[in-house]
Length: 377
Ligand SMILES: *Cc1c(COP(=O)(O)O)cnc(C)c1O
Image 1 (cartoon, helix red, strand yellow):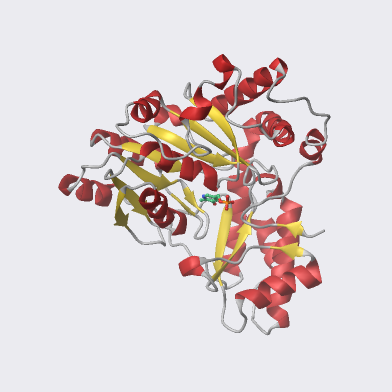
Image 2: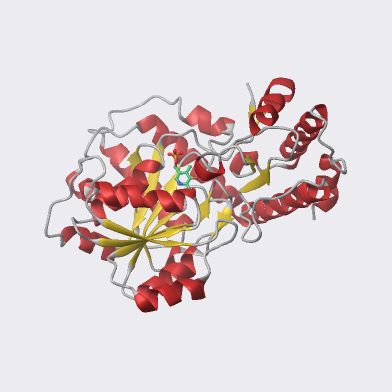
Protein backbone atom coordinates (compact mmCIF):
# COMPACT_ATOMS: atom_id res chain seq x y z
CA UNK A 1 0.00 0.00 0.00
CA UNK A 2 1.24 3.45 -0.90
CA UNK A 3 1.07 6.33 1.51
CA UNK A 4 -1.30 8.52 -0.49
CA UNK A 5 -0.27 12.14 -0.10
CA UNK A 6 -2.25 13.17 -3.15
CA UNK A 7 -4.54 16.14 -3.66
CA UNK A 8 -7.45 13.71 -3.19
CA UNK A 9 -8.39 11.02 -2.55
CA UNK A 10 -6.76 11.26 0.87
CA UNK A 11 -5.97 8.68 3.53
CA UNK A 12 -8.89 7.14 5.41
CA UNK A 13 -8.88 6.60 9.16
CA UNK A 14 -9.57 3.12 10.48
CA UNK A 15 -12.84 4.03 12.20
CA UNK A 16 -14.21 5.29 8.87
CA UNK A 17 -13.23 2.06 7.15
CA UNK A 18 -14.83 0.06 9.97
CA UNK A 19 -18.06 2.06 9.77
CA UNK A 20 -18.27 1.17 6.09
CA UNK A 21 -18.17 -2.50 6.93
CA UNK A 22 -21.15 -2.46 9.29
CA UNK A 23 -24.15 -4.61 8.58
CA UNK A 24 -26.66 -2.80 6.37
CA UNK A 25 -30.39 -2.36 6.49
CA UNK A 26 -32.58 -1.65 3.47
CA UNK A 27 -32.12 2.11 3.06
CA UNK A 28 -35.28 2.47 0.96
CA UNK A 29 -37.52 0.93 3.59
CA UNK A 30 -36.01 1.27 7.06
CA UNK A 31 -37.35 4.37 8.87
CA UNK A 32 -34.21 4.40 11.02
CA UNK A 33 -32.11 4.99 7.95
CA UNK A 34 -34.17 8.04 6.99
CA UNK A 35 -33.49 9.45 10.46
CA UNK A 36 -29.80 8.59 10.22
CA UNK A 37 -29.50 10.24 6.83
CA UNK A 38 -31.35 13.32 8.06
CA UNK A 39 -29.19 13.66 11.21
CA UNK A 40 -26.06 13.30 9.08
CA UNK A 41 -27.31 16.08 6.80
CA UNK A 42 -28.04 18.25 9.85
CA UNK A 43 -24.46 17.73 11.03
CA UNK A 44 -23.26 18.77 7.60
CA UNK A 45 -25.28 21.98 7.88
CA UNK A 46 -23.78 22.58 11.32
CA UNK A 47 -20.25 22.05 9.96
CA UNK A 48 -20.60 25.07 7.66
CA UNK A 49 -22.76 27.03 10.12
CA UNK A 50 -25.93 27.21 8.07
CA UNK A 51 -29.63 26.51 8.33
CA UNK A 52 -29.64 25.64 4.64
CA UNK A 53 -30.60 22.09 3.82
CA UNK A 54 -27.72 19.71 3.21
CA UNK A 55 -28.11 16.64 1.01
CA UNK A 56 -25.86 13.66 0.33
CA UNK A 57 -25.84 12.40 -3.25
CA UNK A 58 -24.46 9.04 -4.34
CA UNK A 59 -21.69 9.99 -6.72
CA UNK A 60 -18.25 11.59 -6.61
CA UNK A 61 -17.72 15.35 -6.18
CA UNK A 62 -18.26 16.11 -9.84
CA UNK A 63 -21.90 15.08 -9.43
CA UNK A 64 -22.50 18.07 -7.14
CA UNK A 65 -21.15 20.52 -9.70
CA UNK A 66 -23.20 18.96 -12.45
CA UNK A 67 -26.35 18.74 -10.30
CA UNK A 68 -26.05 22.43 -9.41
CA UNK A 69 -25.76 23.42 -13.07
CA UNK A 70 -28.43 20.96 -14.24
CA UNK A 71 -30.90 22.18 -11.64
CA UNK A 72 -30.23 25.91 -12.02
CA UNK A 73 -29.71 26.32 -15.77
CA UNK A 74 -32.55 26.84 -18.22
CA UNK A 75 -31.95 27.08 -21.96
CA UNK A 76 -30.63 30.54 -22.79
CA UNK A 77 -29.70 31.49 -19.20
CA UNK A 78 -26.55 33.57 -18.99
CA UNK A 79 -24.19 32.20 -16.35
CA UNK A 80 -21.03 33.90 -15.14
CA UNK A 81 -18.13 31.45 -14.90
CA UNK A 82 -15.38 32.77 -12.63
CA UNK A 83 -12.25 31.19 -14.04
CA UNK A 84 -8.93 31.47 -12.24
CA UNK A 85 -8.21 27.77 -12.30
CA UNK A 86 -8.87 24.51 -14.08
CA UNK A 87 -12.02 23.58 -12.13
CA UNK A 88 -13.22 27.18 -12.39
CA UNK A 89 -12.95 27.04 -16.16
CA UNK A 90 -14.61 23.61 -16.30
CA UNK A 91 -17.96 24.91 -15.05
CA UNK A 92 -18.56 26.38 -18.51
CA UNK A 93 -18.97 22.86 -19.88
CA UNK A 94 -21.74 21.96 -17.42
CA UNK A 95 -23.53 25.23 -18.14
CA UNK A 96 -23.38 24.51 -21.89
CA UNK A 97 -24.53 20.89 -21.55
CA UNK A 98 -27.73 22.13 -19.89
CA UNK A 99 -28.38 24.79 -22.52
CA UNK A 100 -27.02 27.85 -20.72
CA UNK A 101 -24.76 30.52 -22.12
CA UNK A 102 -21.53 30.67 -20.10
CA UNK A 103 -19.68 33.98 -19.94
CA UNK A 104 -16.21 33.70 -18.41
CA UNK A 105 -14.49 36.16 -16.13
CA UNK A 106 -10.91 34.99 -16.51
CA UNK A 107 -8.10 36.02 -14.21
CA UNK A 108 -4.51 35.01 -13.48
CA UNK A 109 -4.17 31.38 -12.33
CA UNK A 110 -1.32 32.34 -9.96
CA UNK A 111 -3.48 34.33 -7.56
CA UNK A 112 -6.96 34.53 -6.07
CA UNK A 113 -9.84 36.36 -7.74
CA UNK A 114 -9.45 40.07 -7.16
CA UNK A 115 -12.75 41.50 -5.88
CA UNK A 116 -12.32 44.97 -7.35
CA UNK A 117 -11.52 43.55 -10.80
CA UNK A 118 -14.60 41.37 -10.55
CA UNK A 119 -16.66 44.39 -9.54
CA UNK A 120 -15.37 46.40 -12.52
CA UNK A 121 -16.51 43.54 -14.74
CA UNK A 122 -19.94 43.41 -13.06
CA UNK A 123 -20.45 47.15 -13.48
CA UNK A 124 -20.40 46.59 -17.23
CA UNK A 125 -22.29 43.29 -17.32
CA UNK A 126 -24.27 41.75 -14.51
CA UNK A 127 -27.16 40.14 -16.33
CA UNK A 128 -26.52 36.64 -15.02
CA UNK A 129 -28.86 34.18 -13.34
CA UNK A 130 -26.06 32.75 -11.28
CA UNK A 131 -22.29 32.58 -11.15
CA UNK A 132 -19.93 29.70 -10.48
CA UNK A 133 -16.81 30.01 -8.35
CA UNK A 134 -14.29 27.58 -6.92
CA UNK A 135 -13.32 28.04 -3.28
CA UNK A 136 -10.11 26.02 -3.60
CA UNK A 137 -8.99 25.17 -7.11
CA UNK A 138 -6.90 22.05 -6.57
CA UNK A 139 -4.68 22.02 -9.70
CA UNK A 140 -3.03 25.31 -8.65
CA UNK A 141 -3.97 25.16 -4.96
CA UNK A 142 -5.40 28.68 -5.06
CA UNK A 143 -7.85 29.73 -2.37
CA UNK A 144 -10.58 32.17 -3.38
CA UNK A 145 -12.62 34.18 -0.91
CA UNK A 146 -15.86 32.47 -1.83
CA UNK A 147 -17.78 34.19 0.98
CA UNK A 148 -16.93 37.73 -0.16
CA UNK A 149 -17.28 36.87 -3.84
CA UNK A 150 -20.80 35.57 -3.24
CA UNK A 151 -21.72 38.75 -1.34
CA UNK A 152 -20.46 40.90 -4.19
CA UNK A 153 -22.41 38.83 -6.72
CA UNK A 154 -25.51 39.13 -4.57
CA UNK A 155 -25.26 42.93 -4.68
CA UNK A 156 -25.66 42.58 -8.43
CA UNK A 157 -28.60 40.18 -8.07
CA UNK A 158 -26.59 37.11 -9.06
CA UNK A 159 -26.84 33.77 -7.24
CA UNK A 160 -23.70 31.77 -6.44
CA UNK A 161 -22.77 28.14 -6.98
CA UNK A 162 -19.51 27.44 -5.11
CA UNK A 163 -17.29 24.39 -5.49
CA UNK A 164 -15.55 23.68 -2.21
CA UNK A 165 -15.02 19.98 -2.87
CA UNK A 166 -11.33 20.36 -2.03
CA UNK A 167 -11.68 23.22 0.44
CA UNK A 168 -14.21 22.17 3.06
CA UNK A 169 -13.00 20.62 6.33
CA UNK A 170 -9.44 21.91 5.83
CA UNK A 171 -10.31 25.49 4.93
CA UNK A 172 -12.99 27.13 7.02
CA UNK A 173 -16.14 28.23 5.24
CA UNK A 174 -19.04 29.91 7.01
CA UNK A 175 -22.05 29.65 4.75
CA UNK A 176 -24.08 31.97 6.99
CA UNK A 177 -21.50 34.70 6.33
CA UNK A 178 -22.01 34.32 2.59
CA UNK A 179 -24.62 34.49 -0.12
CA UNK A 180 -23.67 31.11 -1.52
CA UNK A 181 -26.79 29.41 -2.88
CA UNK A 182 -25.41 25.99 -3.67
CA UNK A 183 -22.25 24.84 -1.94
CA UNK A 184 -20.65 21.63 -3.25
CA UNK A 185 -18.46 19.27 -1.24
CA UNK A 186 -17.05 15.79 -1.73
CA UNK A 187 -16.21 12.86 0.50
CA UNK A 188 -12.65 12.15 -0.63
CA UNK A 189 -10.75 15.37 0.08
CA UNK A 190 -10.25 16.94 3.52
CA UNK A 191 -13.08 14.94 5.10
CA UNK A 192 -11.00 11.86 4.36
CA UNK A 193 -13.58 9.33 3.26
CA UNK A 194 -13.06 7.16 0.21
CA UNK A 195 -14.44 8.64 -3.03
CA UNK A 196 -18.12 8.12 -3.70
CA UNK A 197 -20.25 10.88 -2.22
CA UNK A 198 -21.19 14.46 -2.96
CA UNK A 199 -22.56 16.78 -0.34
CA UNK A 200 -24.52 19.88 -1.32
CA UNK A 201 -25.96 22.70 0.76
CA UNK A 202 -28.85 24.53 -0.89
CA UNK A 203 -30.40 27.91 -0.02
CA UNK A 204 -34.16 28.53 -0.12
CA UNK A 205 -33.51 31.01 -2.90
CA UNK A 206 -31.89 28.29 -5.00
CA UNK A 207 -34.76 25.85 -4.32
CA UNK A 208 -37.20 28.58 -5.38
CA UNK A 209 -35.25 29.21 -8.57
CA UNK A 210 -35.48 25.49 -9.38
CA UNK A 211 -39.21 25.33 -8.59
CA UNK A 212 -39.98 28.45 -10.61
CA UNK A 213 -38.29 27.30 -13.78
CA UNK A 214 -40.29 27.66 -16.99
CA UNK A 215 -38.82 24.43 -18.34
CA UNK A 216 -38.34 21.15 -16.44
CA UNK A 217 -34.92 20.10 -15.18
CA UNK A 218 -33.45 17.86 -17.89
CA UNK A 219 -31.82 15.36 -15.54
CA UNK A 220 -32.90 12.75 -13.05
CA UNK A 221 -29.81 11.79 -11.04
CA UNK A 222 -28.62 15.40 -11.14
CA UNK A 223 -32.01 16.95 -10.33
CA UNK A 224 -31.69 18.42 -6.84
CA UNK A 225 -35.47 18.73 -6.47
CA UNK A 226 -35.72 14.93 -6.58
CA UNK A 227 -33.88 14.76 -3.24
CA UNK A 228 -35.40 17.71 -1.43
CA UNK A 229 -38.44 16.13 0.27
CA UNK A 230 -37.02 12.65 0.86
CA UNK A 231 -37.85 12.76 4.57
CA UNK A 232 -41.51 13.83 4.30
CA UNK A 233 -42.05 11.37 1.45
CA UNK A 234 -39.87 8.61 2.94
CA UNK A 235 -38.49 8.20 -0.52
CA UNK A 236 -35.07 8.70 -2.09
CA UNK A 237 -34.78 9.03 -5.87
CA UNK A 238 -32.65 5.87 -5.88
CA UNK A 239 -31.23 3.43 -3.34
CA UNK A 240 -28.78 5.31 -1.14
CA UNK A 241 -25.21 3.93 -0.89
CA UNK A 242 -25.68 3.16 2.77
CA UNK A 243 -22.15 1.93 3.56
CA UNK A 244 -20.63 5.06 2.07
CA UNK A 245 -22.94 7.15 4.21
CA UNK A 246 -22.02 5.19 7.37
CA UNK A 247 -18.40 6.02 6.57
CA UNK A 248 -19.19 9.66 5.94
CA UNK A 249 -20.92 9.90 9.29
CA UNK A 250 -17.88 8.47 11.09
CA UNK A 251 -15.62 10.96 9.29
CA UNK A 252 -17.97 13.76 10.24
CA UNK A 253 -17.87 12.66 13.88
CA UNK A 254 -14.06 12.69 13.64
CA UNK A 255 -14.23 16.22 12.26
CA UNK A 256 -16.40 17.47 15.13
CA UNK A 257 -14.01 15.84 17.64
CA UNK A 258 -11.10 17.79 16.12
CA UNK A 259 -13.01 20.96 15.27
CA UNK A 260 -11.03 23.18 17.66
CA UNK A 261 -7.64 22.22 16.27
CA UNK A 262 -8.16 21.03 12.73
CA UNK A 263 -7.89 24.38 10.94
CA UNK A 264 -4.79 25.40 12.91
CA UNK A 265 -3.16 22.08 12.13
CA UNK A 266 -3.81 22.54 8.41
CA UNK A 267 -2.45 26.10 8.51
CA UNK A 268 0.72 25.15 10.43
CA UNK A 269 1.55 22.17 8.26
CA UNK A 270 0.84 24.01 5.02
CA UNK A 271 2.98 27.00 6.01
CA UNK A 272 5.91 24.79 7.07
CA UNK A 273 5.64 22.76 3.85
CA UNK A 274 5.79 25.89 1.71
CA UNK A 275 8.74 27.26 3.66
CA UNK A 276 10.65 24.01 3.30
CA UNK A 277 10.03 23.97 -0.47
CA UNK A 278 11.27 27.53 -0.84
CA UNK A 279 14.32 27.02 1.41
CA UNK A 280 15.17 23.98 -0.65
CA UNK A 281 15.39 26.22 -3.72
CA UNK A 282 12.26 24.80 -5.34
CA UNK A 283 9.49 27.01 -6.65
CA UNK A 284 5.86 27.28 -5.65
CA UNK A 285 3.36 27.67 -8.49
CA UNK A 286 1.28 30.37 -6.80
CA UNK A 287 2.28 33.93 -6.11
CA UNK A 288 -0.41 34.42 -3.48
CA UNK A 289 -3.59 32.82 -2.18
CA UNK A 290 -1.99 29.58 -0.93
CA UNK A 291 -4.55 27.13 0.42
CA UNK A 292 -3.82 25.05 3.46
CA UNK A 293 -4.89 21.83 1.77
CA UNK A 294 -2.50 21.44 -1.14
CA UNK A 295 1.00 22.68 -1.98
CA UNK A 296 1.73 22.98 -5.69
CA UNK A 297 5.39 22.88 -6.70
CA UNK A 298 6.85 23.64 -10.13
CA UNK A 299 8.69 20.71 -11.67
CA UNK A 300 12.36 21.75 -11.52
CA UNK A 301 14.72 21.50 -14.46
CA UNK A 302 16.52 18.17 -14.81
CA UNK A 303 13.56 15.90 -14.03
CA UNK A 304 10.06 15.34 -15.42
CA UNK A 305 6.94 15.20 -13.32
CA UNK A 306 6.56 11.50 -14.14
CA UNK A 307 10.12 10.69 -13.06
CA UNK A 308 9.55 12.48 -9.77
CA UNK A 309 6.21 10.78 -9.13
CA UNK A 310 7.47 7.33 -10.14
CA UNK A 311 10.64 7.66 -8.08
CA UNK A 312 8.74 8.69 -4.96
CA UNK A 313 6.33 5.81 -5.42
CA UNK A 314 8.75 3.05 -6.31
CA UNK A 315 11.58 3.85 -3.93
CA UNK A 316 9.72 5.45 -1.02
CA UNK A 317 6.15 4.24 -1.31
CA UNK A 318 4.83 7.80 -1.28
CA UNK A 319 2.28 8.87 -3.86
CA UNK A 320 1.77 12.54 -4.68
CA UNK A 321 -0.20 14.06 -7.58
CA UNK A 322 0.85 15.35 -10.95
CA UNK A 323 -1.53 17.67 -12.72
CA UNK A 324 -3.73 17.93 -15.81
CA UNK A 325 -5.15 20.35 -18.33
CA UNK A 326 -3.08 23.54 -18.70
CA UNK A 327 -0.86 22.54 -15.76
CA UNK A 328 -0.09 19.03 -17.02
CA UNK A 329 3.62 18.25 -16.67
CA UNK A 330 4.39 21.61 -15.12
CA UNK A 331 3.69 21.01 -11.44
CA UNK A 332 3.39 18.30 -8.81
CA UNK A 333 1.06 18.54 -5.84
CA UNK A 334 1.36 17.47 -2.23
CA UNK A 335 -2.02 16.98 -0.58
CA UNK A 336 -1.80 17.76 3.12
CA UNK A 337 -5.47 17.75 4.00
CA UNK A 338 -7.56 15.63 6.32
CA UNK A 339 -5.81 12.47 7.43
CA UNK A 340 -2.77 13.36 5.31
CA UNK A 341 -2.18 16.41 7.46
CA UNK A 342 0.21 15.11 10.13
CA UNK A 343 3.84 16.03 10.70
CA UNK A 344 5.36 12.58 10.24
CA UNK A 345 3.55 12.10 6.93
CA UNK A 346 4.88 15.38 5.54
CA UNK A 347 8.40 14.57 6.73
CA UNK A 348 8.28 11.25 4.89
CA UNK A 349 6.89 12.93 1.79
CA UNK A 350 9.49 15.68 1.72
CA UNK A 351 12.30 13.19 2.29
CA UNK A 352 11.05 11.05 -0.59
CA UNK A 353 10.85 14.12 -2.80
CA UNK A 354 14.36 15.24 -1.87
CA UNK A 355 15.96 11.83 -2.41
CA UNK A 356 14.25 11.43 -5.78
CA UNK A 357 15.30 14.89 -6.95
CA UNK A 358 18.88 14.20 -5.88
CA UNK A 359 18.87 10.86 -7.66
CA UNK A 360 18.25 12.80 -10.89
CA UNK A 361 20.95 15.33 -10.03
CA UNK A 362 18.53 18.14 -9.17
CA UNK A 363 20.15 20.15 -6.37
CA UNK A 364 18.16 20.77 -3.20
CA UNK A 365 19.59 23.51 -0.99
CA UNK A 366 18.67 22.13 2.43
CA UNK A 367 17.26 19.05 4.10
CA UNK A 368 13.55 19.49 3.32
CA UNK A 369 12.28 17.47 6.27
CA UNK A 370 14.56 19.42 8.65
CA UNK A 371 13.41 22.70 7.20
CA UNK A 372 9.80 21.57 7.58
CA UNK A 373 10.35 20.69 11.27
CA UNK A 374 12.17 23.96 11.94
CA UNK A 375 9.36 25.99 10.42
CA UNK A 376 6.56 24.29 12.33
CA UNK A 377 5.25 26.74 14.85
C1 LIG B 1 -11.66 16.80 -6.51
C2 LIG B 1 -12.40 17.99 -6.95
C3 LIG B 1 -13.67 17.89 -7.51
C4 LIG B 1 -14.34 16.56 -7.73
O1 LIG B 1 -13.66 15.84 -8.67
P1 LIG B 1 -13.66 14.22 -8.66
O2 LIG B 1 -13.13 13.88 -9.99
O3 LIG B 1 -15.05 13.81 -8.46
O4 LIG B 1 -12.77 13.84 -7.53
C5 LIG B 1 -14.33 19.05 -7.85
N1 LIG B 1 -13.76 20.26 -7.67
C6 LIG B 1 -12.52 20.39 -7.14
C7 LIG B 1 -11.95 21.75 -6.97
C8 LIG B 1 -11.82 19.25 -6.78
O5 LIG B 1 -10.58 19.37 -6.26
